[in-house]
Image (cartoon, rainbow, N blue to C red; front, side, top):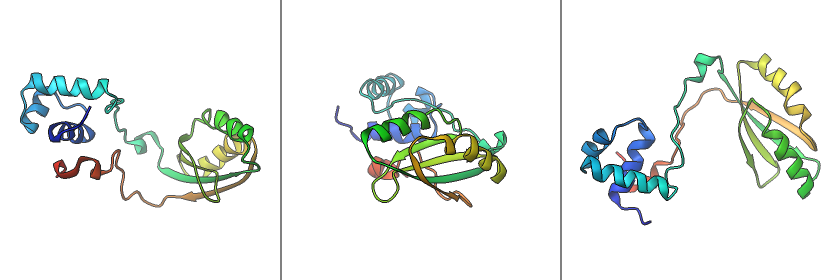
Length: 159
């Protein structure tokens, strides 16, 4: 499916308000509700839209500390990578994990209540991960940008 300007406009609107009704979206984009619903369904069916989710205020849950954790494994063998990846998915405080190029094998995003809570997470979750040679942690001081999608995806349709 090739995306046109209307499709990109639908996607741009949904990234800022996934709960917008078909009528609201149709009015903003200049389509009928029926045409909008048909296009949105096609975007879902073709995999452009994978899910809808709520953005939560994590501070209300006490999660005010974001930690970037860089991990180097003792080996980059297939067995070591698979063992690490199988276990890191079980860590409840890890919200993102990336396999990296360069000096670190993985970067994890961990959410904690505070530094003491991160110490607990380090002790009970991270230090138990298999084949880890080195763990380095950096604490985010303040979030500057948090986008689900880079605005360049939408080209000229983004305001």
